[in-house]
Image 1 (cartoon, helix red, strand yellow):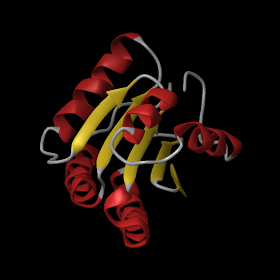
Image 2 (cartoon, rainbow, N blue to C red):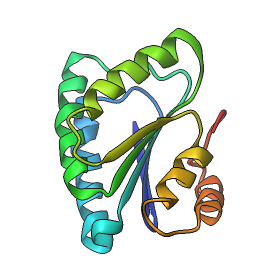
Image 3 (cartoon, helix red, strand yellow):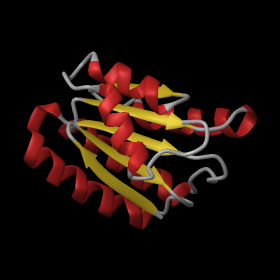
Image 4 (cartoon, rainbow, N blue to C red):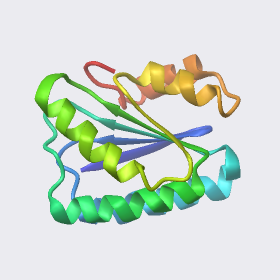
Length: 144
């Protein structure tokens, strides 16, 4: 299951459980809606929590397509991967491979605060206020 929330100018995508290929259409729809509202200011921040398994082959293919789509609509893409060790390294490797095709700025982060600070260097907004609103909405989890 995936949850999204737009906190101007950031579209947060929070993985709650395993990401499935079917979730990507939902993310694409929300990215398009956010882009219509914000245009070139749109920043994408995905949060992958501890305990979410790496995507399977079908989902990786859908994510590649979704990443290309997001790169066309978002000013920058930031992926926050909670956790440490082998699991984090594996997900980081898969994510980096997906993002290599992106023509936009992208980064992989260990926490949401860092992602928002980096995004604020590209698009003008208050990262602390954005973080607090995301926290209030329950988008942040352990390690973020």
